[in-house]
Image 1 (cartoon, rainbow, N blue to C red):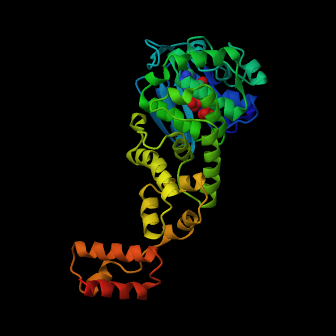
Image 2: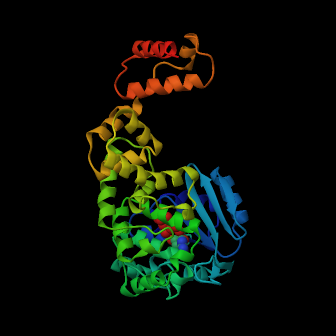
Length: 391
Ligand code: ATP
């Protein structure tokens, strides 16, 4: 089966003696499903640091060793390979990070999220280790936790379960779904740190099947269990589908996850808890409110341009997704590209000294241009001269 892994041949050559290593996790899952990716996850019992360095050297790449416990990433030719030291994990408290110790390959499979990810194939090739019948669940298209504490230990797995359901067209088995609902109702999701929730939301909402995941979040009430509370549901999905069409139509440069998140956030809601980058936070908080204002007030010209630019491109796109509007389409097609043809140095040549007046004149010119009153450089210069003459 391993011969179907595109990158493995080269890695095996570089390894020399591959015994003791296992291909593991999502790599095996995708291989069995017949859609192998290029990512390769390898586990071994014992330290990986030295091996990572050797592999990087032989593959002509780089090794980065992470944290204080046995994981390394080897990157080469734009590909990457995760090397993991087999570990045992115990959870001192629900939703806290686990305590990690060296373990056997069996321990390493037992710490995983779902049966379909708890598979390992020994190198150079052999029968898969499958202690939890992951293969059976792959055939049954089922997402199943390994034990009943799984979601209590790590509620991020609820997001992961939904992500796999949507991506693979699978479904949680009834017991797993019951456990997910129980963990959600017990308020465990709120105990996760903001950055952990952020990473899960970005992964979930960034996938092509995000609309399915949003409906599932609503069904399980995971949306309301997050800090800040989100509002998932049919409305959000319809809006997101529209947003995606518009983003493609206008070649808008905004990450898919952010647009999706903006359909889930109520206007006025702070998302500080998620610890996004400053710019992402401003957009996610600002776009829903500005979109509402754009839809309700329907400004035109320079006023539209100012309001649209405040949280662009997200706010005007969201506004268009809420309601189709010729003025907003005009903003995307024309206004957003409008630039003055005169500059500060033109004003200097006309005798305006450096200082705030330069900005004021340029702002006024821009306002007039956006309102369609100025067409071309000559008209802009004429208007500038009038403004200068008027003081
Ligand atoms: P993807 O295709 O999304 O990358 P993946 O299965 O490779 O899927 P990763 O997030 O890269 O997922 O994680 C690699 C492996 O680590 C998973 O297959 C899973 O076995 C394990 N894993 C990841 N996150 C968790 C978690 N929260 N709890 C337990 N095991 C996890």
